[in-house]
Each structure stands twice: as C-alpha cells, then as structure tokens.
Length: 357
Image (cartoon, rainbow, N blue to C red; front, side):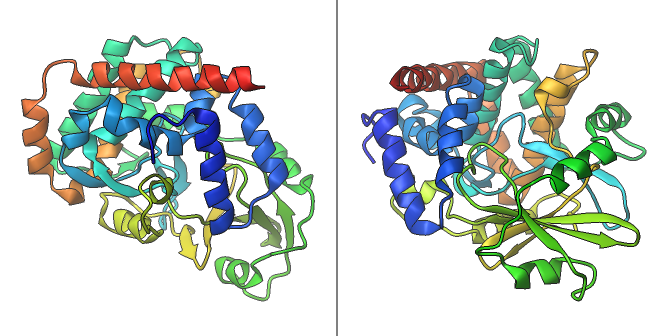
C-alpha cells in the first residue's frame, strides 16, 4: 500500500476490503465517519489501518525493533475490567481485534500518541514527557520482574478504587440495553446458546452500536433472564486484522488466540472467539476505561505505569531479554519523539478528514 495515498482514498480502500471480509452495517459506518471528525483522539482510535500505513515511514528506527505478538490498536481507552472465574475484578487490555506481529515499539508509540491527543483534548492533564516516562517505566519493570496479572484485590488498591468509580449503575445499564432495537437477521443462535449458562434459556437479541475502529461491523446482544435478573452476551463480528489489508497478506484471529494464551493474564471465562464472532459478557462491572468519566482526583502517572505494565504482560511471551536489550540501546526520549512524529501525521490526516465534510 502506497504511503502517499491520502486519508480519504486510504479509507475507501480499507472499507472496500472490509466489505469483502464481513457484512458491514452501512449506517454504523456512516456514524463512524462522523465520529472521526470529533477530534484527533477519536480519529486515532478509529483508524488503525491508517496508522499501519504511516508507521514504517514516520518511525523508521522504531520499525526495526524486535517483533512481538502485539495488541496493535493500543490506546488509553483499550483497557477495562472483567470478572475472573473466582469473581475477582481484573483490569487489562480490553480488545484484541487487531493483534498482529509487529515491533514491540508500535504498541508503546501508539499508546503514548493516544495520551498526547487525550491531553490536548483535556481528557488528561499529564505532560508528554511524564506520560512517556511512566509508560516506559511500567513496561520495563514488567519485563524485568516477569509480569503479573492486574487483579484488583489485595494489590493495586488505588487502581481498584479508580475502576470502581467507572462501574455503571446497574438499573441504568440494563435499561439502556433493553431499549436497543431488536435484531432478527443474521443472529448466531448457536454461538449465543453455547455462551449462556443454560442452552435452553430463552433470550431476545438486540443490535448494539459501540466502539470506534470496529464501528460498521455487526454487534448483537443476547438478553436473558437468569436467576431472577438479566444477563447479557455480546457477539461482535470478526474481521481479519487491519494489517492484512495494509500488508496485503493473510491474517486471522489465530494471532489473538495465541497472544491471550501466552500472556501473563487472568482470563475472562466468558470471553471466546467462536466461528466468526468475538463473544463476551456484558455487565455493569465489566467497564472500559473512559477518560471523560475519570474522577477529577486521579493519579495519571500511576495509571499510565499500569498501562505500560499490562502491555508488558502481553509482550512477555515473545521474549523479554531481546526487548530489554533493544530498549537499552535506544536514545533518551525516543518514545516521546516517535509519538510526537506519529501524532503530527495523524493530526494532518484528521484535519484533511474534517475538511472533507
């Protein structure tokens, strides 16, 4: 894919390819286009396909770093909570739709770039330097110490307090899901039946619109009454990672499966990849980090350290020693400079996209 292609043509090309991979909901895709105009932070979240085009030219040195199985579409709002098999609250990376083998630096630069945009839009107040230092500190410590899942129990009490603030009001949460429009076509009943606690449990299916990069793909939610209260399972349609389009190669969700199996991570027992769907439990206590909803008093430096640490948890299986050796050779402020360069390229694209309206 030619780097000189502008954002409009790149988006048209990517979406033509996407339609060949999975059914696309046109009205949701139009909504995505509108959301991309909101600001650079939302634009970044929605356009990982474009990031992959810019990456090798804008970050030449970082693009030669050792490769790992990486999250790919990493940013400050790709973190959240779930309950493990013991009922404990766990915090970590939320979405793995874009997992691919890339230099470890890509995840770090993308995370740092998202912080820069979030700060410029006043979602965060931390400086670029402090943000990059915090991310790298958490990441390197994780690699040196061998990692540890972020379980919000006796450890990480400050993060638990922060996460609990973001948990939704149950009555409001279920009211919103009940109010969604029913879905009748293309419902994967076999997938839903397996994901529910009883295959014979009656349920209704509604259509959900959520996310940024995945907007346009089908999201269906099965709602059932079980044990005297509602439960929900979401099925999100799978498409190959954007890297398959950017590199004109064949990639599948097998990369995501491998990453999750190998990571230092306590699994979500309700998360699965079945056929052409990613299935997960929806509940008031499964909440994505939303910067706009963070409490006014928060330790942003510690939060970014935790994000760096969790990124390390996911990279560990690819070999920490070679990553640490490469980090040792990199110049001071390399992460800040690389993130600033990518932020400039993405901001230019956003301006072009906004004017195209």
